[in-house]
Length: 76
Ligand SMILES: [Zn+2]
Image 1 (cartoon, rainbow, N blue to C red):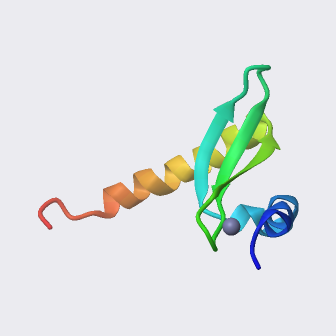
Image 2 (spheres, rainbow, N blue to C red):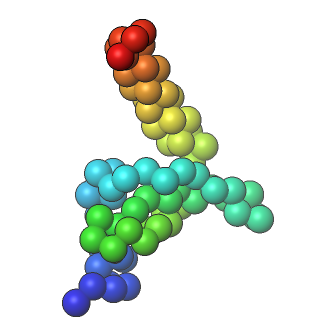
């Protein structure tokens, strides 16, 4: 069985950071919500986050993307 309880456990647990990142949303009240994919069903799960946390992880991802792009051969 897979459903709300499993999703709640993923959102609350340490494994959250190993789920596929799907971005950050700004709610109408100005608060930030991070989205990640459930590895089992692909649903988007949401968890409250902060600007500092998102800046840190987005900059880390940007560094990985940029060095990976630089590793691609020019003609390949
Ligand atoms: Zn799921």
